[in-house]
Length: 202
Image (cartoon, rainbow, N blue to C red; front, side, top):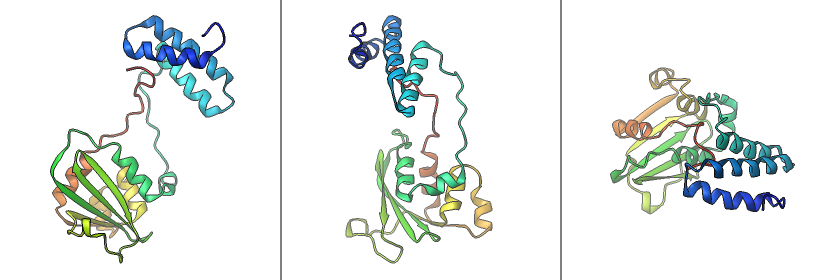
């Protein structure tokens, strides 16, 4: 397939070989050659970067210590609130299961948004409520385990590590109620991003 110029099919076949045997260096190098050709042919800059990053990973040329770039506050503020919580949910450590369901309510005073995070077993489900004045449905009518009242910018600063909770509380930008220990456990159960993960190898 590679000799015939069918690089996509060659990559499909070689990808199975690499995942069947992660130590097969010959398969890795052949897959890197296929991805390199796909990268050369890609008109999209993003797709070219995907392919060539995979090539570096397969050939062992990827940087050993990837530096995490700090996202700007403006970038994080532009993310829709529910999308921000959905992204946070992907980082929940599966080992951090809870025996009883928990509900955390986040009230953003500047955007008039309320997000309810349901934590059940090894998953969490964020939901965007219409507003603070609108009650949640009957299935979630129980009082929240903990409630957070803050602003989007203060919450983003907290997530990015650019502000600490005591300072935000002293400034009147953050308030907690309910089971604060459960809330702290929930926050700490989210693993930090790992940008140096393997792209195309097991």
